[in-house]
Image (cartoon, rainbow, N blue to C red; front, side, top):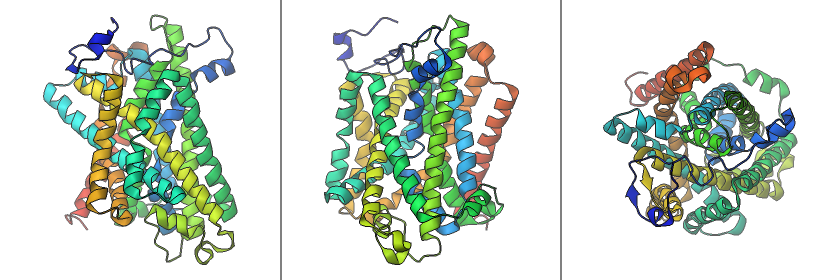
Length: 456
């Protein structure tokens, strides 16, 4: 497709044609030809990191730690199942982008009516907002805990992430991947250290990964489980995965090379999502080991921060250092997640409504759409952290409800022989994906009916 000229790019317009997904970095990373396994894997490693951070963002923290504090290790099974579903869906999303050269948003718009496309765009934009609620609040609270900056000011500071992203894009996509990977490493090390100090029950952890029917019969446990699913398997990540997988330069006429790209992208995705699974497990284990059976209120980030330095709650390991490490990890999580969230916003806006504008304006608008509701809420409640953080669990449950609207098109497209040719899903992949989608829809309906009192 003809490149957009500077003059054309400066115009704000609805472009009837489609450019490449994340056009400025699409196919920008060269993959060595005929290299060995490890060198090739290193070339493909990176997009999985950007995907993984969405599965360990601040929205996971409250739901996972609260799950451990309330039900000990029982909800580890939910994290395990969610992670396996995430691996399946993200592998499908990456394959879709590599094989078709289009992201999920572009294909959804292309294969739906104008009205349905608009409806799905609205749902997806709301999901992005729900995702950013946790990321923005988490970053702002971390800034306040570390530097004693007012919450509203901290929220405004998080909007500057978009300027950082613009700079990083100029330096190259691999630089973004490296920075995000470093932030993920900080999160992993902090929680591994804190869990090690907490001395959890190994037997209890192993038993926790075995699913229990109590999850379905206990309303509050089900609500929290859906919050964990929504925080773990997030719809915007499917759009992001189908796009960033295209940053590697692949000749789509070379079927052997295409197969290699699909294979190594899947390995990268699964490896990084395994790291996310470990982090989410550590969060829940930390909640179970330190806070189960205590009377402390852990519904807010500041409560967790304070509890880690309170010997009456966590015992002899209590230390201001643990609290500060928690805040550092929270800031790392929020910053890495906002980078990928902004990229997702651009992908969704370009794919669904084909809005073309300068990159700086595009990033500011997509970021502004997400920041505005949180900032308005914070101003209305005069920076009351308790009221602002009440949005978190609800936002994660909404993500679980919005997920099928992204999953269903993904499964349909990747199952299409016409679209995917020899790379179409095999029978077991289709069966697994549809089963996961149907179960999630049923659980959502059940939760809604139970919440409004239709069923006990």
